[in-house]
Image 1 (tube, rainbow, N blue to C red):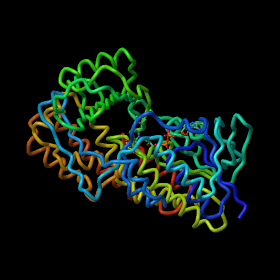
Image 2 (image 1 turned 60 degrees about the horizontal axis):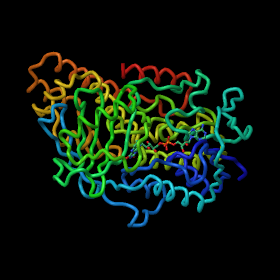
Image 3 (image 1 turned 60 degrees about the vertical axis):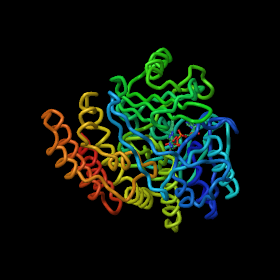
Image 4 (image 1 turned 90 degrees about the vertical axis):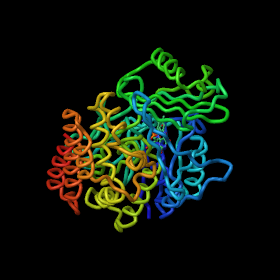
Amino acid sequence: MGKKIIVAGLGHGGIAAAALIAKQGFDVTVYEKKSEGTLGYDWTDIFAPQALAVAGMKMPPEDKYEYKKDMTFFNPSFTKKLQQHVPEDKLEIKMERRDIYEHFINHALDCGVKIVYDCEVKEPIILGNRVVGIRTEQGDIYGDLIIDACGLNSPVRSNLPSYFGIDKDVTDNEKIRIYRAFYNVASEEEAEAIFKVMLFPGGIKGIGWIASEEDHTDLLIGRFEEFDMDEVERFSDFLRETNPRLGKEKIRGGQFVEIPVRQPPAIMIADGYAAIGDSAFMTVPLIGSGIANSLKAAKVLADTVAADKESIFSAETLWKYQTGYYKILGNGLAPLACMKLMLLTLTPEEIDYIFENEIINDDLITIGADFTGLGSVKIDPKDLINKAKQVCTDTELLKKIINCGVRIGKVSAACTMMPKKWNESRVKAWAKVYNYSFK
Ligand SMILES: Cc1cc2nc3c(=O)[nH]c(=O)nc-3n(C[C@H](O)[C@H](O)[C@H](O)COP(=O)(O)OP(=O)(O)OC[C@H]3O[C@@H](n4cnc5c(N)ncnc54)[C@H](O)[C@@H]3O)c2cc1C
């Protein structure tokens, strides 16, 4: 076959796509900046195990995972909670991130993928309108298709020419900064909820979670603004007042990281280029989970590669990847991005009102926080607006909810108008409409 596929960065979707494409007989090499055995963070992740089978992977050994417990969502004043109720057949699994990586990497190596560690990718190499390779600290490397799995701040995506129409950077409201660490258990007192997720706790613009495990307490603080260790100390002390199990001794983790929480990009492919995973903002906008989505996207990308019989890997042939991705995930993620946008306009008092007056309920919270990347139920903007009209006496808040419903309607309509086939000017015109629908 002789065609060379380059994967920039060992992101989850990148590894999965690499494995599926190598299995088709292509020469696939991943270039990763970190050293072998150092990938991931020192904590656990949650994802839908069904996505493994989609990407042709086995389940991990049983002693490597457990099933995730349902989350309980709290309003800013902690006066009302909403309970997720994920059906048993859709329960996600919780696994150490390093074990996830090991499982994925071993699978990819078995499929014939080559991995080059300690190789930082600097930028794409462009020839005419095509991405033809990557510039790395070990020199220039050329390939027939460059799969960008370098994550949120990918130097490949952010150095593409503007005329490709691919979003290069994300704005402050499109990513959430996270601090996460495991602390000791300071009290045997039973937790109010095993997996407690707090919206705008203490009036801050962001989320927090405290998951009470037997031998540790998992703390996550997410903000739409910069914060530092002093703020982490202050805020965790505030949380300790109502969460006595949260100890002061840090056992694991303790890093700051960023996650994209925004709509899927209007364009995620170009001649010789396809983005996957966080590089293509595939996370669920309300919760930031992206592993399962990346695995499902890997399957769509591999199928697109297989369907491209001449291995042309042009925007025209790769467009099938984008339309396929939107069909299974993007069309459902885009409305959730509208919900996130509305959330950012709300005051803590308005979120209290929404919880207390059951404008959102257990069902909606279950869909919004669905790690599987959408269940069978979809958000109906008309339902949302009608419900808000029935119970909401606060006109300012009602306006925001109606705007959100209207935006969901526009965004969904824009998604259905995506061109079925690649035509540069038509796609770019559509991209304008799609992007505008989020404004
Ligand atoms: C704190 C936190 C908690 C999360 N929890 C969950 C969870 O519970 N469930 C879930 O589904 N998702 C979770 N996510 C999101 C999830 O990690 C990502 O959505 C998913 O891993 C897909 O991202 P990615 O693999 O494409 O990118 P990344 O994880 O960012 O991986 C990118 C890879 O590319 C490499 N790289 C970057 N730049 C270069 C370069 N210049 N040259 C070479 N290599 C490079 C990086 O080293 C890395 O290996 C979480 C994310 C964070 C930060």
